[in-house]
Image 1 (tube, one colour):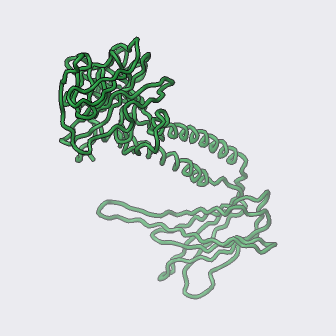
Image 2: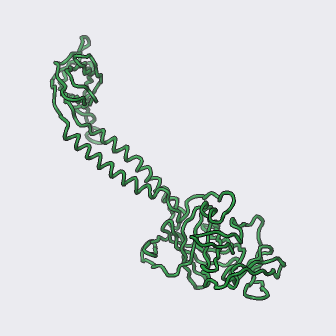
Image 3: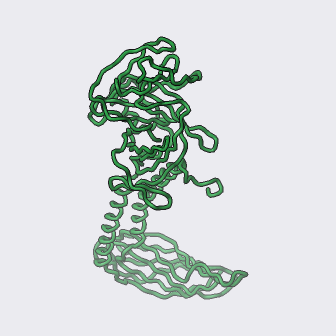
Length: 438
């Protein structure tokens, strides 16, 4: 949201002047001295001409019960960017979007040597605002954008803002009901605002501040109001995390690739056993058998057992046990090889395959044999031929895929949350998706 019209040149003389309201007689304090153009009485809500010695009444406005009270009282002093300012004015400004009013508050700050600046507040979101001393460059883009000091600001919203409540003094002719065309361009944490009033255009820049920083700057008691929703130039708390986590992801992926290459280079991939067998389903008989012994050499490593069978619209299930001949330690596992195919209304289909591979991890060196117990579909005497190949020390690529997934999940989660944050930001803009688009 934009701050009000630009302030005139900062005063060369400072001071506080006391006067009385000609309408209600209440005491008035003018803190900006000769810079004050209008003063709004906090008692009767008359807007007075501060340049008139008799304080001519320019406007009176009605105030509803429960009207806004400044969160930072007039006269409060605070330090912004190392400079002490005093709150001298307060106004509420309102826009209407689809018939609904949206209001924000502006606090006019004054320093006798630095001049004026503003604090704006909307739903607990604060901005430190100052009037630009040079004009930004308007870009011929769609959607519109402007460039200022090397930063590109995207168009966020254009609306007509009206002043609906004032307190204190202002260096311009303030009026309740006065309207201005306000356009905001964002590049978080900054926002550029143009305000067109009476054929004059004023540009200002706001930088997002947390409520806690505002409270600390002005030494206010209690806690600031909690921010509601995502504001137009609110910096994403996840933006830096997204960049850093994807940088770490790239580093870890590179490390993972190097490890995979090294492991692949130094693995033996030694075939230590291979045998071909036949199985014919029978109702009786013990189909289990043991293979000839074979040696697993070298260090403790994995063992790959690969099964290849001539299944065709059939299946075979093999109960395996890899048994150490000396210690009797057994590694039990079962594997199925099945392959089915056919035709339907959608054409040819198939599922399964004629081979299966399983890896048994961390098997010590020694002499081993396999106990195999095959099973297959009954109801016929069809013979299934299958081959068993045992390979020592093979790279397990699935482990790297799991590691890659483990790295990808947090990066994707943070990225999704960052995208969601930006979606909520732009949902409040002129480019919010319609209900049909959603």
